[in-house]
Length: 102
Image 1 (cartoon, rainbow, N blue to C red):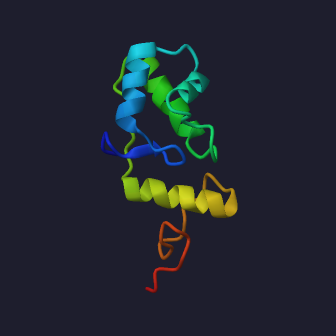
Image 2: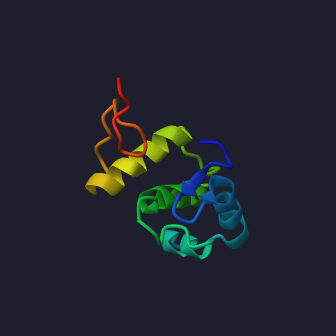
């Protein structure tokens, strides 16, 4: 994921903003990342990701997500449609949940 890609899609909070918040505030728990423009307080899709970024920060690493913005958005669309966070969407499904016509 690139720095300006959004981690919290509900409130448009980018990875860059979350990294800056973690550096500046060094929150003791991941839930305090919600103070960064409300990240994680909408649909809840990004909460596990925010926890992962927080753990990376606490381990002295630069918080990073190894997924494209498209894959991330597709996973969220699937989550919003099904409530299933662990199963990736079918390859023939577009991020908005509509069939791709393939």
